[in-house]
Structures are given as C-alpha cells and as structure tokens.
Image (cartoon, rainbow, N blue to C red; front, side, top):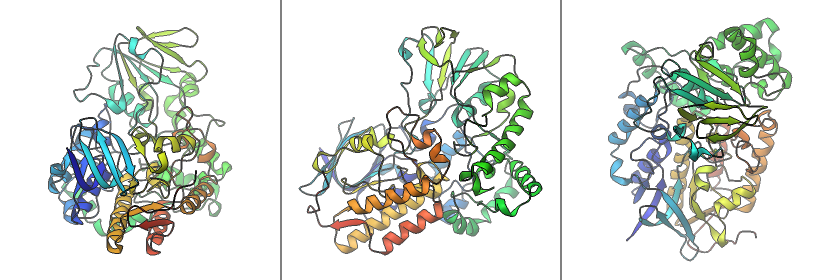
Length: 544
C-alpha cells in the first residue's frame, strides 16, 4: 500500500522532530521515518560511555516555545546522554509527535517523478510513500565509518563503533580494551572507562588539542538563573558566530602580549569551548596568531602530562595543525588517564594499523596488541554521508551520491540543484554541517524550510529547486569564505579528508551563524532568489 502525503521527514532527531511539528502546524499531512526504535537522533545512537554535551545545556534547546523551554530543568552544565535522551522524549511527548513517526524503519530509495513533481519513497520495512516534499533530517554525523580495517570480522572478542554502541552496554570490567581514535568521542570514552577496564590500549594517529571541562551541577537557584535569561538567549543565540551564547570579543592587534595572555588564561579557566569560539577570531586566519594560541594550549597540556613520551604522542606539534582548525574536544581528567599503569598510548601515525586479527590489533611492523574488546572511535562520513547512503534519484537520472562523489555542492545546505522538492538540514555548505551549536542552526534551517513551503502554497507553486546559477553563486561564496581560513588548509573531517576519495571542500559554512541566517532571510525576502518555483511538473532541464 502506498501512503500519499504532503511531506516525508527522514530522521527523528533535533531537526526532524521540530520539522514535523512545524509542518503539522501548517495543516499538512506529514510523516516521519526513523531507523532507530525511538526518537533522539544522535542522542539515540551515541550511547557510548561518557557521551555528553559540550554545548551548555541551557542553549542546546528549542527556543520556539518559552513554556516548553522553562518546563524542563537540566541537572548540570554539560549533561550526559541519558539525560539528553530524556529531554528529547519530553519534547516529543509534549508535542505529541510519536503518532506521526514510523520507527525501526530505514528509507532506502527515493525517486523524483518528473511527470507530476512528486517523490516515490521506499523503506526497508516495505512501506511506500508518495510525497510532494522529501526532507532529510539525517544528521551531520550519523553515517559511521564502521568498516575501517581489514579483518574486523575475524576478531574473537567484541568490536563496536561508538556511533552504534549497544543499548545494553558492554561489560568492560577487568577486560583488555583497545580504543581506536582520540577525537571528541574517543576522549569521552577513554576518560570514562579508565577506572573500570583491566587494561586499555589507545591507538593514536592524530594528537588533539583539548580543553578541560568545568561541569557544575544545577540546583533550583542555577536553573532559575538560566531560565531568567530566556529573552536574552532567544535574541542572542541566532546572531552569534557559532550559535553559542558567547562571541568573539577581543581583537588581537588591540591587545598587548600581557593582555592577550591574561585573556587566554581567563577564558581557558571558563571550562567551555569559549577559547575556541569566543577568544580571538584571528586564530582562524593568521598563522602567527594561530601558533601563539596553539602554543598556549600545548603548554597547558604538557604541564599535566609531564612525561616526554606521552607528550610526544598526545600533544600536537607546531607543524601538525593549529588549535581550532580541527574539532576541539572538552575533557575531564582525560590526560591524567595516561599516567595510570594500566593505560598505554600507542602512536599509529608512522606505524599504522595494518589489520584486525583474531587476537586484537596488528600494526604494520607486525606488532599485535592482544585485546578482548575493541571500541572504534573512528568517526563519520560527515555532512553528506547519511543522505548519500540512501539511493536518492533526482531529475534526468541524477543520483545524490553520484553528484556528491564528483563534488560536494548544495545551495545554502538546504537544497541541491537537480533534486526538486528535496530539502536538507545538517548538510554540506551550511554552518550546521560542523561549526554551530546544533539546536541553533537546525531550528533556523527547519524554520526556513517551513516558511519556504508556506510561501509556495501562497503562490500556488508545487515545485521548488535551486537554479544552476543560484547554486554556483552559493558555492562560490562558500569557497571564498572557507578558503580564507586555516581550516581549509588542514586535513580533518571538516574537509572530508577522513573518507578516502571524498571530494575535498570545507563542509561547513564558515561565515558565521548570524551571517548565514541573514543571507537565508535575504533570499527569502527577495522571493527566493536563486530558486525556481513552478507548478508541477514543468521546470528547466538541468545541465548535462
């Protein structure tokens, strides 16, 4: 049986839930499809030990309803996954969203029909949807790189990817545990399981700059204080550079060396991402400034590690990359873990992992590290990966995967030329692909999509698609902005370099959250300039 609806939403995370609510409010027939057994998105899938916010809890919230915001109280500044998942259930139940979501169902194929301007969508559970609009709320970090090493299926113990950590958890007590990867996720795992495991071997390829987290508990007084900031936060968050409550306040050239050091010390002591997102913006453009701030962070890390061998493995070197050009993790006593007798850091930069063998991890030089459990914190195919793993077919036989295999291009990170009535959130070339407090950016994107669909209905239009010229203009602007930064010169998942063969481009819009919002609004105010609206199905043919 085919379900004929106005809009189908893929995913029931932060974006998908709000998008479902908004389109229902427009009076549309809308349905959500979610691969997980419940809501939560990234907070459903990422339930590994230590998973938690590194955005402050009181800003990682929906801001469209004051009562919804104030009726939930967080227990601390940076809560852990179970509490975050409970919050998402609270939102879902308050808005009565579950009745319009099919769970444990994965969209496998979506084909645009040029004859009537609609999408035919199939799932792995046999459901078929005939929908006018297809909206991908699949998440920017939701396509885990699970098959990274030869021989994974031969391992005699347990092997898991952090992005698919089992709900029931793993028994790690007294076990020989290997952790592959020390990005933000790996760091949270390592610092959390260290007191439990028998031994832990951490395989380190790329050292990370880290910042210590300060995570005070919230009682009634603290909760009352942050809730009293509702007007300030709703006004401020959408306009800052990264969608956090703070913004860059200082100019490097206007400060003396002593003032710079004092500012860095003060912000470092804040125990948040403020050093990265609200100290000196020049660190993203000026190599000399980048190096001075990087050296400051290196000194802080070295003072805690003390051991020259550990410093060599775990602290980035001057020639590696600059602070802030990779994702910056927050941590709690992470570095101190390596001072334990049962923890070993193994550099795999010059001596990489060759394969997984039945006994454990085998390095290129033949060394085998015997293990009972392997936890792979090896990352995701960011931005484009989740949607590209679905067989999405647009006009003239174009496939989304095929287009993105050639070049990572979108219009505003909201639509793709050649794929009418396909909207996206958390996709490449928008701040939500990486550089944003996610709730800030995902709310903005879903609201833009809702307003766009409402405008189409007012105009009697049935189909919308970016023009070739509109997409070219956005990609050009995106690249000019991104290529002025040191991020573009650094190999990381921010540029797709963690996925072999992925076209290189800075995945996230680097012009700032407030600027992006203003540009999106300007395009809407100009009648969706750079997009073509029409009745179905007549539209201009895409270029060959």
